[in-house]
Length: 108
Image (cartoon, rainbow, N blue to C red; front, side, top):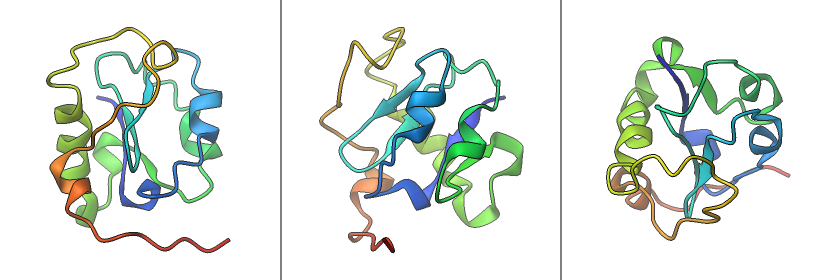
């Protein structure tokens, strides 16, 4: 099991979760953040600090965002397990599910 970042993160990328993560497993794509399923230790530190409630425990992901589990996993298919987001920096891609979304409006 792992945590999943879902649709509310798209085009926001607040990064509070990145700062809170003790194992540096939250990576930044072009339009959203992704949790590496093999590097996440299921501590849950990221979930309460997300200002838009985009992070869910895998089994608790709302039905309309279930595909985001696959998006988080597949995002790393060609990256493997880099062993920490800080050394990788922004990754110049997104999962096709996210790429296909129209721009997301967020209230300030």
